[in-house]
Length: 106
Image (cartoon, rainbow, N blue to C red; front, side):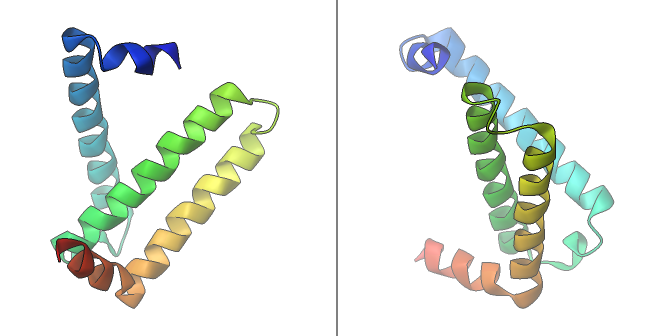
């Protein structure tokens, strides 16, 4: 937690954080493209929304797991990730993320 307080005040840490964020977004997108059968068929705005949703979930989950490890053992963490990815996949298949992406663009 102290790290995140420092990021906003330290330009070097801020640049590092931006780089790390971009790298893991690319990594997740590449993994989805290689291992998620429906991924290539979805329009780019849908893929973007699903990617952001999953990454946002994982960012929050990792924070919870670090601060409360007894509440987030591996089995529960893995189940939560599977549920989030399954939910995102269902939204993508149903086209709900497409509508959400359109609403977000205004």
